[in-house]
Image (cartoon, rainbow, N blue to C red; front, side, top):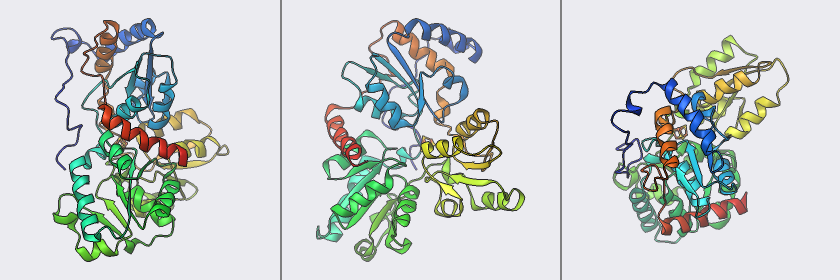
Length: 374
Ligand code: SF4
């Protein structure tokens, strides 16, 4: 994998040489509080579920990426600060009003999964697959919303669609009504887990690896496959292992294992329950007092759930390796710098995320198609 952070930016975070650089997190947090109050009439601060508590404490809204992006478009606020990762800020810019500006406080807050699928690689895979099939079978491209704006535009212009972890089943079912084969990126696990639940056997799914010639596939494999899964994954969710489930089965058999569909096939299929972030939150929220859960998703969210529901036992399925480190890049000093830019009216702030208009139009087409279908 070449780029683990947002690859296309030449912009960097700029701090004034002597001021913010030397401030402690504690001092920054005090300043953020003051500035946020001052700017509240024109500012909305969004905090993704996986964001750390210091930042979440300032969020006007918390949620998953699509919900936050949709919400901000309906707000009468000129400045939207998205404390999440790059593709989330892009989606917000695609959905928001022309007069709204979207900021990402640290431009290096990328998503490792999104960065595993670059547009030129996807275009090349598309060409190879369709050449081998001689365009005799229709392939429908579906992208998980965790991807760059140009991949959203790619599915928009190729009769495909976007999906989320909540609506993946519905969108993939729709895709198979439109064509014979599915090209799913960038998360192989969500694609595989969902297709398997829809009754597609594993031997009809192949993994397309962009780092290998022809994706590492023979022409026969391409002709025979029903589903092409991109060789991408979430570094957080792929970290959960079957041994961790075995541990709970042995030592805490009453604990219910619930995981996100970005987890590997084995983990997904051996858990007691699985679903999107919203589904996990809802399940825990509605559980009877005394229930125990081991949760296979990002730890900031798991810890927050544990704090919010003291009448339940909520633990991480694995206390290690399950923090989204790229999201964690939104440090107080970067948030403070972004708020300072808004205060002084810096229209050239490097943290403003602007999606190219042509890309935006096609990406919006794909987002709207998904919303109509789900
Ligand atoms: S948790 Fe995984 S998919 Fe979500 S932003 Fe982090 S790296 Fe990307």
